[in-house]
Length: 244
Image 1 (cartoon, rainbow, N blue to C red):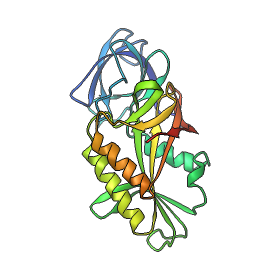
Image 2 (spheres, rainbow, N blue to C red):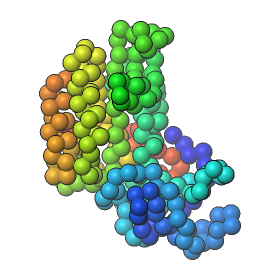
Image 3 (cartoon, rainbow, N blue to C red):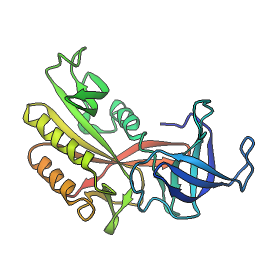
Image 4 (tube, rainbow, N blue to C red):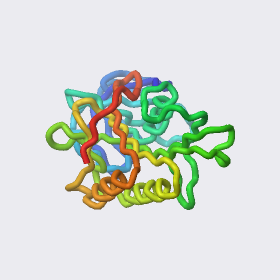
């Protein structure tokens, strides 16, 4: 996925109120001058642990939409070793791209793909199916996607970065889907490159870690893929080892 909007460089000063960050610009842009401090939107509901410290390099996108109060969005930060993609609205899109271009080899062989499919009172991120109508398909694969940005110990990329009751709910739903006879898959999209493998964050959310191990035992497939993250775009790059 290439960024369609202009990308502007700056340094993150602080992140607060979940969806806000203050950025000092490294360059002139429109009416803003190098050194100006602006408040930007941060599309990330998590803690963003290990994803930012004051004065880390950052990349912002600009959106000239009159309905937007904040014209800039924080897309990624850099810890000196890697860019870290913190925009949690991107993983679904880049996952679909990676399925369609064959990068995610485990999810090939389906005729159709449909994002955001409703299941009961919830939604699953991606449905893969055979045939022209997903409602009548006899072969289906439901894929839930999670954005992974937290650096753990010994080179681990870990999820979640805070207790996630919503994530726990999704794992239970995937187990129900599998038990009903359809294929179910948990896909972790790792948006940093200073890691070696994926693992659930046992110390942060032990219930999530327990449910993920249970889901794997019951037949839910667990996949993790690393992305190439840089200010020109984000692209799923290669499979990672999963350690449960």
